[in-house]
Image (cartoon, rainbow, N blue to C red; front, side, top):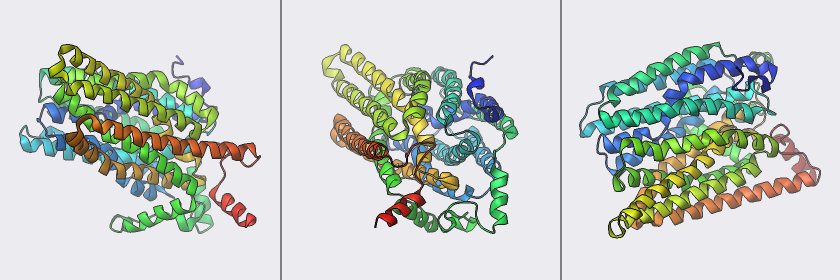
Length: 473
């Protein structure tokens, strides 16, 4: 009865953990369908989408994150559960409209817009969920708790991804009822989540109200945003710039993520184009290579990554995790070379190309399993007090900025250089790895000198660091 190891979760966090597991059993189906590569495969094979349209759909998860800074800023100093429920409900509503998407050339673009809108609201769900984890789960167990939740979310989506591939092979128009049906299951999962509570939130908000100020450290920097921010986004951008200027270590961390993310996002739509168009695999096998293999590896590797994350902290973790991303890109690049010469070399090269992409996505699953932890809670290594929402918003919005550029750059390079896009991506990945390695080395030197430990559970606050610097001067 303790398959999810609830007994290992701190006692005060168990109720929320169990509620969230129950919620994810249904919500995970919906999120897996919206966030995965299924939609890109549908656009390619059902709508016969161009490389541009495939890239648009593949890029929308990262592109949608551009608004995450807004979601994070809007949630600062406000109750989290009502915001979470509103974002999730809006995401479900956007997916339900797919029932009315026509089967014609314009339908592909309508479908892409619907998926983009759903993913915009899903980015708000992800941003606010990270804040809920900060409140509800202690730092000493946060990575392992996050891993347990991600395992549930990934496990329930696996039969869905395989099943929908076989379904679309049977009926290419199944998207018109399949997406709405899964959206209804997501709505039921959302109803289950209403029982969750945010520990310590009410006391924090009341304390801030009693002081006549925001309960957040440095209220001038992270004060709650008003709805006016929706029509004045430059105020949010300015606040983001101020945070990055004041916290240079977090800025460098984001830069390292930028290079790794650029490398991955450049090759993701190229992988989809080659697998679905050049190799012309069916829905079932396309979903298997692009989505199922990474999810299976993610499921197997998450517990191992989580224990190591809690032991070493985010920076050494990111150094090793980046190697997995680089290996994935390199092996998929080998598959792309084989695919480009499949006609002249025969069936053996075709089979080897398929195997190359399968093995490449095995490494992608290893990278993704660690990335699920570091991407969701890595910013908490740097964020202090109630800055978590803003730091998450900054980091996710930077993900969106590279999502706006990298996939289109990758497809442009593919159409120009063919498989030459992969060596470029490997080079970017190497730069990101070097930046992470330098940050980890500097932190190790600081810790060895007896300074405060900048790790989960004992990080140097930005204010303390600035005070120390002033004292040295």
